[in-house]
Length: 79
Ligand SMILES: [Zn+2]
Image (cartoon, protein in one colour):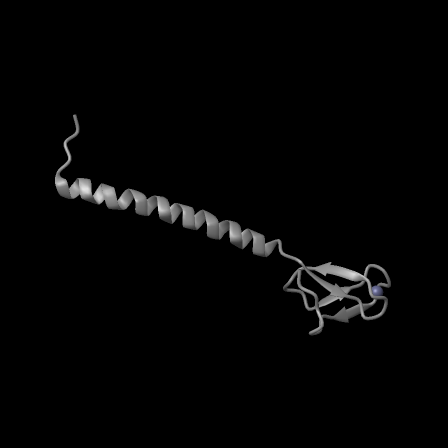
């Protein structure tokens, strides 16, 4: 039989929900980070109007339709 004193019971009562909350928050933020890493943005080719999906950290892309290399400018489309 395990005996726990009042401070220990109080500590358990506080620490266990806190640990659960921390775990939930960590798993949620990890999922959000994964979502952000897999996020794509769509830019429109200036030459042929093709919508090209690239990763958000890229500044240059090659259009698959007319194979023109170009930089990403301000007129980009976010989805
Ligand atoms: Zn193009």
